[in-house]
Image (cartoon, rainbow, N blue to C red; front, side):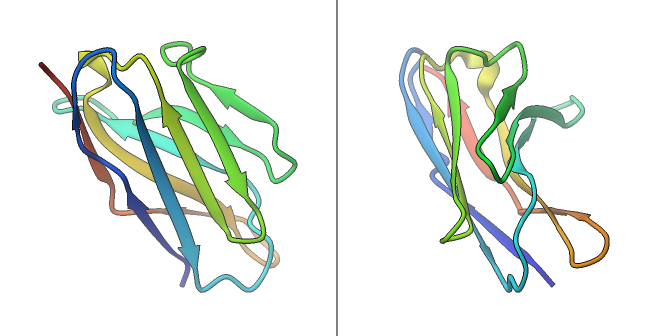
Length: 118
């Protein structure tokens, strides 16, 4: 069973920056897409962005130009660089990976809290 472990969540002031990391373990085959979702209190989980194995990334409109996703295929890790943070970015951020030998399945980390507040 694939395990995804996030790190880097913290309390940060508006306008600040934060970098989240996620490491996948128990990997035998190549991971397909990886990425990040988030869930704010009282709201549904929403896409932040994803990145293909080849490095093509897509982002939610709300974070375009502020957030950057990158990945290291050799280390099975994915990062989320968040700049110009806003209070509305406050949420639990979940790492995501698509993985499988014959059929891709979705896997999720347990989440890391990001709070943007002065």
